[in-house]
Length: 617
Image 1 (tube, one colour):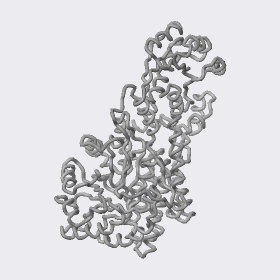
Image 2 (spheres, one colour):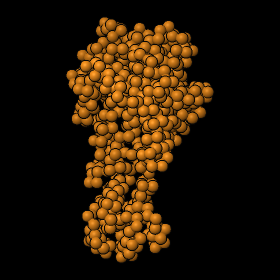
Image 3 (cartoon, rainbow, N blue to C red):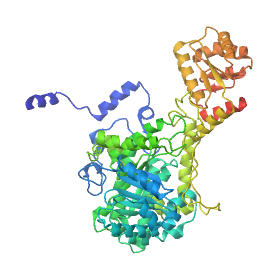
Image 4 (cartoon, rainbow, N blue to C red):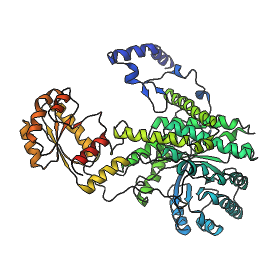
């Protein structure tokens, strides 16, 4: 049998890279290889259409081992288990406690409590944690930054009173004043002085982290993957520097820091991001000369993105968050929060929270993603992405360090400017459909209505009066927000009817009618498709009978020269006239008075806004 196998494999010759390239060039029939097949990423590097073993020859990441420095392959050696976390907004301690106990019986093993600073007290914590075994379940807390030390002292007393093994208490306090500075533009630098005291208070609890890096906020503001990576590293290093400068031991400082990172929809790139982040963070911490390499481990709580979530066709959010959760799980994170699919327009319901929990349980209990450590290791593609992201992320890190560190970069506004510029670009790309949002700017649900759904306003745990901001802040909105606002405005004002006047070449008229229906439905227009008409007069008459506000002629480029102008003249201004496509005869059509065209190079959002204006909507 073994001889047979050996013979089988020797019959196949291994083609060289050049032979692959030569074959691809033949299939391209003269088209440019780089323009057609090389992906120019937003992250600053190119991705080739194929990779081979020789592409890994210069890389060090494939030589790494799980659970060993520099931890590119994860912090664990034996399995890939992560905590399934659900966050709870606490208005009443007793109610929140009852909810926590309930979801602990439904698969959750990590709790996140979010409450106002004024609620912090020993009695509040005792009521909140009643019946919760903090040496079995991970517990995380978010409150006003100014109350973090007080909360830590209360928790230490509480854990001691319960007699918990200090090694087994796992969790965190979300102390991150710099997040408020970068996101809100507020000067909370005095609060940074609390960090050393906070660390000292919890130093006897090695698995309870109290300094957080909330780069998930950058993700939710539209940051590209490499931006979140680079700034998160600089953010964490700023805390490391401040803590060690204050006399905190390097090992203790590093083991006090936790990263809350976002997960965007780019499946393989996000998987590689977490690997690259661990690699680079280990190298950063190593420079502080910790006594143990274990201090170089990066602990990450991954959170699915809200930037790409939508109000319309909201069940598609489940597809987005599921692939995001898969990326993070396979990448080997410490814990994960899957954001409920309805969070953009309502307080999550019991149903949406159950689905969010089950999304992780499915990956763990049925797909067994918790069994295999770093399954992406050795993949030529993923190793390349890991290396490329590390290189580009490191450039951002070094640039921030040259400015004097992350805090100085915030004060100068360079971080905010960079993220704001990316958000603006991404909204522009979405408007032109260079970046797709299924159900929003691509393949919208034609018949869906908002049914009163409106985007949830951002809420902050620490309310306060408006004040002049000392620093720039990040200005952001979800990627779908512009289209949603337009669609809701159309729905609330008047929904126009768009009629497809399909004529001529069967394949082209059907393709262009489908394109036009999708285009116009992005604004919530009612669209009427048709099988085809023998004459333009027949089509126009049918459109007027249907009380159409817009008539879209759909045909082939060659036939527009024959059909478009007669149809436009016969319509005679009784409805808006649109040509589907950008035919060679476009200038002739414009000269005849036709001014509306829909095609792939259009700015969809601006075109639809213009149509609304022309229709008096």
